[in-house]
Length: 210
Image 1 (cartoon, helix red, strand yellow):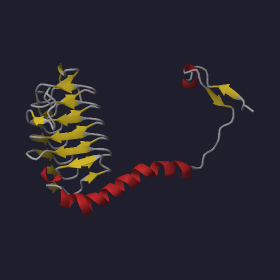
Image 2 (cartoon, helix red, strand yellow):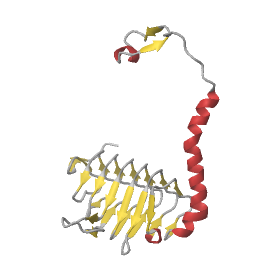
Image 3 (tube, helix red, strand yellow):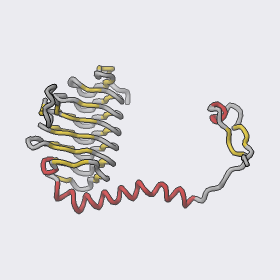
Image 4 (cartoon, helix red, strand yellow):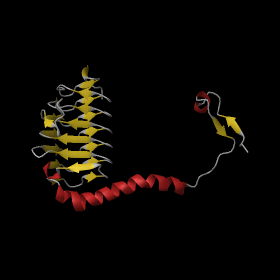
């Protein structure tokens, strides 16, 4: 038996979307919302415990207050140096080759599924914010199918840089302090301090209005 349904309020979101809403609303106990929302919080607390008890001894450096939550892949951690009070969220891929070094500055924020790969040197300054799915890699693969990849130019990202969702930073790039890179951009050339860039490849759009 189908429940009676009625349209949403005139001009409302439900009506504009062509949806209908139940004639009777169901009251859900608040405890269910708390249980659902608790899962990410639990993962964060587990990450804090692992950071204090395991990561601080395994990495080249692990600053106080930094938290890594359920990483996807960690390789070459002895050559990865993490500053203080960093937040690195789920499914991060942090990898450093035998001759490489990866530095993550104090108070950096790395969103979900960020991938940082250093075959040479990759430096990320303090107070940077990376949205989800950001890729920063200084490696390349030759057309002859060489494996593993080879170092193709160091990357340096200055302080207070903001990389939008799904940004790719390619080898040999320097991004100046306070720059902003729009979502989905591919950074192939240097970005000046304080500059706003976007596109594929990323091009200057001026100075961000903050």
